[in-house]
Image (cartoon, rainbow, N blue to C red; front, side, top):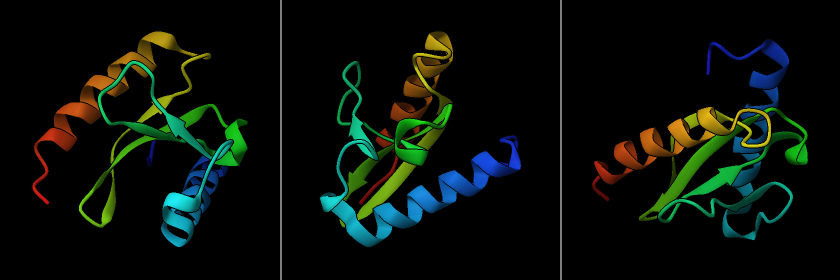
Length: 95
C-alpha cells in the first residue's frame, strides 16, 4: 500500500474503514465479487473510481485483505496477478 500515491492510499484507507464499519452491509459500488476467483471480493475505493482494488475475503469474523491490485479494466494482467497472490495468502490464513 505504501507504493500507492498519497491520495489513493487515503481513499483505500477510507474504503477499509467503511468495510470495517458496515461489514456485509457494504454493497456495490464499494465492493463486489471477483468473478474469476474463489471466494474473493474486491474493495473499490472512491465507489469504483480508484485505479486500485483491495482483494479480500471474510475469514471467521474478520475481513482479511490478501493483496492490493490495479483495477482489472486498467491493468488486466496486474489484476490477475493480484488474484493469484491474494488467494495464496488468504488460503494460508487460519481462522
